[in-house]
Length: 266
Image 1 (cartoon, rainbow, N blue to C red):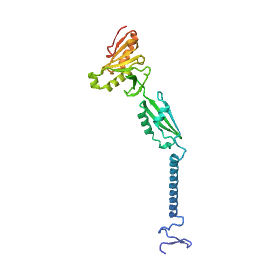
Image 2 (image 1 turned 90 degrees about the vertical axis):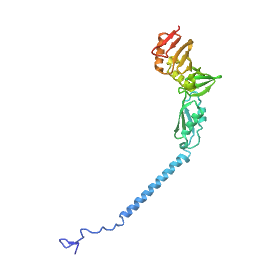
Image 3 (image 1 turned 45 degrees about the vertical axis):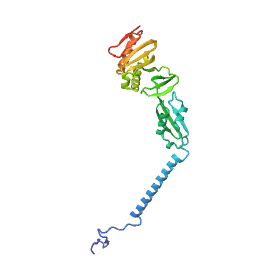
Image 4 (image 1 turned 180 degrees about the vertical axis):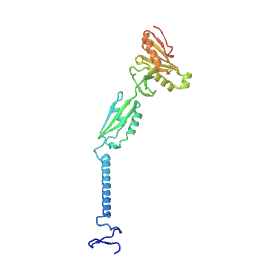
């Protein structure tokens, strides 16, 4: 018979090659059905877990805002910060718009230089505040405007903070003021106040600006310092410190040219 061989004892052997046998009851179709069922089950489980997570975050009472804390306040009170923040107590913690709270705080409380609004799981919002610090004061009527190290006028107070010098702009109609503008001259004065040595800053009463390159200091004890412009501030500070140490009885110091300083009075 074609395609078949007879063994040594006459037993019949199947052909060496031929068409594949059809799959049996436990073949590939059943395996594919099983895999499909597992896939569907996984999809259902993931969907249920996702729905559960959404419910826990937004619908349950477990993760809602119950407490608002503040830190970093010095002049501002924690209560004033919380009131300005207007955190929606009782809302889902995940839904609180922290960026909106930060913007609201800086807008309502200009004394705030920066603020971080942090979710404190499971029930809190933390307001971490950094306040602006005055480096100069501008007198207006019977009150004082505080100016920070960036030249920002951020608050008006009834009592002058101790240890902060006054700023006097005497260049009302000068060409310097017309050229640079009052705000630029204020920033120049701020730069000078920031460069003055700490020991001198503690005894500085007034920073006086006549022109862009004519800024002077009035110290306690009727002493004065001709500073010049705000340029080369570190060199001027070092020179002034050396002069005051060498001649503690002098009354007038000129460091407008730090390489050629002068002093007078006794």
